[in-house]
Every structure is written in structure tokens, then in C-alpha cells.
Image 1 (cartoon, rainbow, N blue to C red):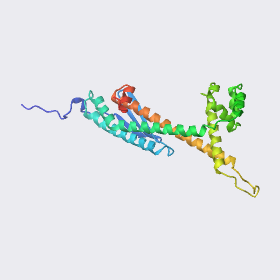
Image 2: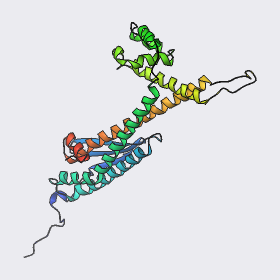
Image 3: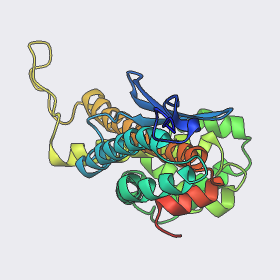
Length: 273
């Protein structure tokens, strides 16, 4: 008696290929990797950093993008080769193999970049301590002022006045966590940078027919350069924000794909299981 054999060697559930678990696309801002698991869909955006980002950070993000891409490709193959009950465990192994090392490397590079930026910003915004009674006199002027009055005073304050306020943040707790304090730091950074350039002779005035005896620093050029440095720092902070968003989104995608709680997915990525 002839017994017919099934045409497909796998269980019936695999006879029709499953749709891809992961789909990749380029958003113009980076690579988007979307996972669709049942009714749940999440996207990881591997952001593209600006040239302002440190080389170690850019290299780490490139490695993370490659790792996530390799994971997505193998996950798509596994979906059609592995029994559904075993798939989450297989995907966890693939995460450990392809994504975890680059994820940890990006985290390390991001923390280092954040620390480096904080140290550089502190050097730019921390003024020399005021001497004598000048600092106390400035503080006595500021204390009775309203927040609005203090904010209006910053633009025309000199480096000594701002230094007097920054020296004792405890006296001004009502504004240390407000945009006013951030503006004091920003203005201090400009004035401190301007002072540095003035001392080393950079951006000196150029003599002209109208001003043949021009000498000393050109204050407008000095402050423009200081503002350029401030803007460069904003770009660095934006890069760090993109790295944080990338790391969070990758953890979310891993959680959905491997059917894990978000904290368990994060521990898997960080090698803490």
C-alpha cells in the first residue's frame, strides 16, 4: 500500500512563510527598524549623529546600527525556521550575539561624551570668584528683585555680577531650577570665553582709514565667537539626546520581539541577566 508523504517537510504551521518580524527603512534622520509581533508594533530609530559628535560615539552608533540590522535579518529567518513556542528564546540568544555588545559600547561612549561635555561646560560657565565686597554688594541688589527683574538684568550684567550670583546658588533657590539660571550660565559662558580671547589677543581690532589707531579686542567678534561655541555645545547636547532616544527605542523593540518586560530587555542588552 502506497502512503503519500507530505509535500512540505515542516509542520503545517510553516507551510506558508510568515511575514517578516522586522522591517527596515531610512528616515533621512537615521535607520528605522520596526518590529511587528502580533498586534504590537514598535520602532527603533538608530539616529544619524552630526559631525560634531565625538568619533568614539559615532563609531559606537555605527556598530549598534550594524548589530541591530544583523539581529533583524536573522530574526526574520528564524521566524520561518523555528517553532513559535521556541522563537522568543531564540531571539534572546540573537540579541545577546548581535546587539548587546554594540549596545553596551554605545552606552559607554555616550556616558563618556556626556561627562566630557559637562566638564567643558563647567570650565566655560564657572567664573573666577569675586573678591572683596563687590560680590556681596551684587547679591544684595539681586535678593529683593522679582524673577522677572532678575531675568531682565542678565543681558547687561558683567562677568563679576554674574559670578557673584553663581557663587552662592543656595541664596537663590527660587531660580536655580528655572530658565533664568540657565541663561545666567549661558551669559557667563559668553563673557568668560570673551575674556579668554581678549587676554590672548585673538580677534583684535583691525585699523581702517576711519579708525587708523584701532587697537585691542573687537568685542563684537569676540562675543560672536563665544556664541558660536555655545551653539556648538547645543549641537553636542542634541547628539546626546539622539543617543538616549536610540538606546531607549532599541530596548523597546527588543522587549516586543523577545516578549520580555522592558526592564528585562534592558538587562539582556546590558548583559545583566
